[in-house]
Picture 1 (cartoon, rainbow, N blue to C red):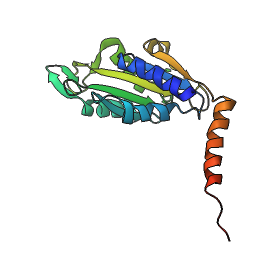
Picture 2 (picture 1 turned 90 degrees about the horizontal axis):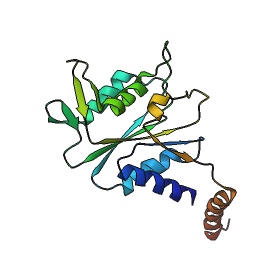
Picture 3 (picture 1 turned 90 degrees about the vertical axis):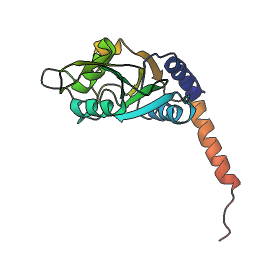
Picture 4 (picture 1 turned 60 degrees about the vertical axis):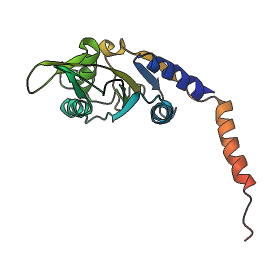
Length: 189
């Protein structure tokens, strides 16, 4: 029930072009639910793009990766092919380590797009507009290498929490697995 509720909530928001952040403890299935929906249940008009952040994620690599996925629509405007929408799934959003002044450049690039609908081309130093993209992110609670993300970024997201499974859910899952195993029988040896 928990997984169905979570999947329905974030998919409804994504289909309405709302950015979603799914927060929760390790092992609650955040990344699995998001990935499965994007790969199997999302409409054909959605082109998913999967990005995993780590402490070593560099902003230039992120920008180059994203720029390589977009095509030119018209002068200064980029995005997915016409009639399509890119859903950019960032796993472990709060993993990039903070620099000397406390900023997290990969996160600031995402925030810049959300504030200004684009970012600067590093070669020509001109603003390029990025259209038809929606962000969905997963993150764990701060601590253990994960940092707090800035309020300047959080304000753009609709927050959904992946709660720990209830005892009934865990019991149901393991009972089903055990019943299947026991129905197979044992070899006579």
